[in-house]
Image (cartoon, rainbow, N blue to C red; front, top):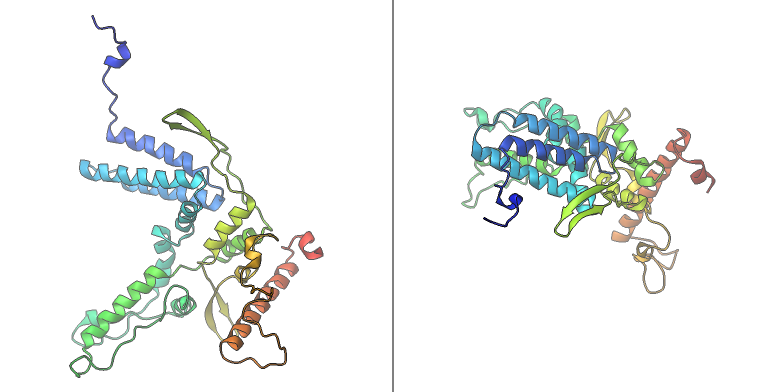
Length: 339
């Protein structure tokens, strides 16, 4: 007779693919409920539910194995985000707000439907018709110049290497390739409500709604270990949301020029850290003077210094106007106004 306990002689429990999917879905919901941002919690949870419903009818075993592997990779990303990895948290929030993934395509889809193709470059080939531009897309592309793209239109040479006129089919291909590259790099515009909410959070005038789940017990080699997921204080949350905000523009219509303009938040030009941080001494020379300043106030500025000063003045004016507008709307705390 064997002296081994009966539990050792039992066969390991093998779960089916459906049981593994249900278990994975529960764990994903559990990790999603621990994100510190309420918009991120709702959007990621909705996206997980939609994705599982899309894959519910998959029969191929190899395909189901790959989908489970992808789900475990997403679970690992959420776990690391809740354990204090700020870059994983930023990656998750970019998916939630539409900087990456399917939500981005859902936001851009209405804008792309309004595009009317231009006449074909080669009359006999309909596919040589290059994509057109709408006022909203033109404003979005122009606002991204210098941030994520260099040019809104590709540089097309007049002649080829052999000295002949540049082929028209290559012109069409270059325009299509450049447009595809732009759509991959730009960020979709945020709604004014979401844009203003991020500004209030970054300035610290509004707090995120904390999650209901406070602790998660994780299994480790040494046994169960209790870890607190949301180890982000208010300052760290503002820094992460600042990275999110600086990637998104907001489309606004200006009646004076009758054009759409993509604007980025003026909040990004302010000092978003507390006094005494190492960032207070960045951009300062050995004498304590800001780098690039002219000691003689009567000396006229020219060249790069004049452009830099003009740009800094424009940013300061934009933030001052934004602050006055929010003060009139009653969205600035009284302690800020009094200070």
